[in-house]
Length: 404
Image (cartoon, rainbow, N blue to C red; front, side, top):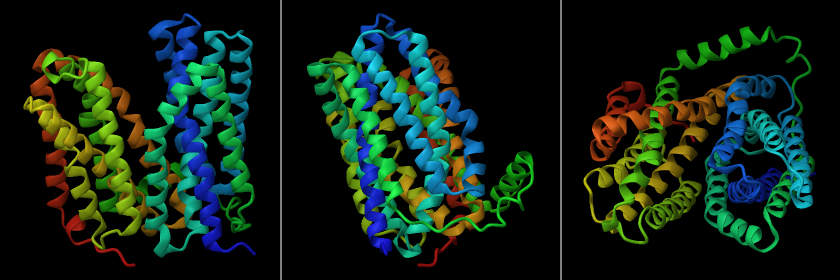
């Protein structure tokens, strides 16, 4: 019989392969859309087509993960995404594809994401011992960070040599590899009485919301997650390239400097995730807040027009903080939330993570126009530190001490 340790290794292998495929897609899809003559507007539509279904359906994905086999849901989601990408790859390689077709495929990917992610957060607790959850989450985040560093470069080479269709084909194969790894894992079945005992979708969402709201530390952390994405991360992604376009930044202006900063963030994420894989603090929530606080580093350094090497260092710190924040938050939730509620809570975390980003992007433009780049970034950095101060002032955060 497969041991828990081996099952975790199989799961990590499938996830790592899937991460690499996913990291290739932005490069391959961008050139596929642009090569087809659809321009930046078309690319925006294709990217939105993937994000919107995830936002709309992720709560249903959480309900499905708590009702039925999480492993089964993940396998089906992988095969759906593999089929969509395989069909798109064939069309791209054949040279016959329309923008509408790309939008349909991107929508299917978004649907698969909406069901895979909530199920995966709960599934890990079924195959990994409680004391190993932090380590496994750290290894998953390390694999993801490495993929984000290596994948785009590899994808760029594939696109340049043999075309974007083959980059999409590699992503399809990575989903198949992930599904095959999941198929080789034995996981406990859901209790036979679980599904019949459930009520309506609305009742189950209300039940999960009441559990979230009733657990004060969890509510505060999830609310902070969404607020940081809207008020800090989204504005940073929009405004930082504007600041970096100044000639004084060097490295070929905005594109070169922005690329260097993103690479620094990726390097920091690898380091932060690897640290989290080795050890997590007993006072997990204070660790989350410490990680969140250093997200402000590159934001405030850019706001102060600091020398670019310092900004790059701030980017490394940002990557460390983002990786540790992700690992510690997911691990705390997995250890403290009831298994029967876990996928629904994870879906709410994911909704907070991605649902408010579009609003943040929309607000970034007017804020930049009204306040200017420096003050806008200073406001974002201040929001990060203010959120940390507010949460650290709460007894539930300061006194929380997680059992091993």
